[in-house]
Length: 83
Image (cartoon, rainbow, N blue to C red; front, side):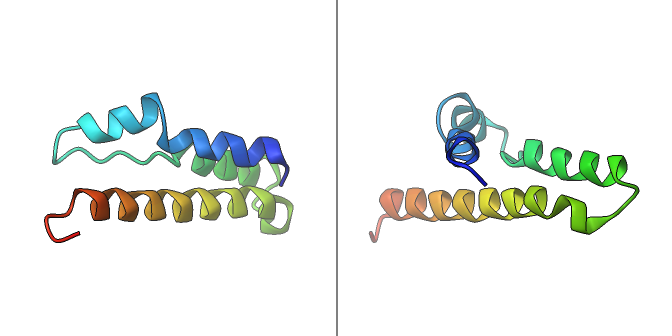
C-alpha cells in the first residue's frame, strides 16, 4: 500500500463523507468504507475468487474500517458529557 492509498482512506472520514455520516437519518446505514469493499469484491470477480490475488484490497478495507472506528471513538469522547 502506498501513500496515495493512505491519503485516500483519510478522506473517508473528512469532508463530504464525514458530513453525510453525521447528517444521516438515525436508522440509515452508511459505510464510509463501501468503496474499499466494492474494490475487493470486484477484484475477487476479476480473479475467479482467488483471494490471494486480492490481499491488498482486503487490507485496504480492514485499514479503512479500523481508522473509521478509531475516528468515531475519538468523536464520541470529545462529545461525551463525562469526557
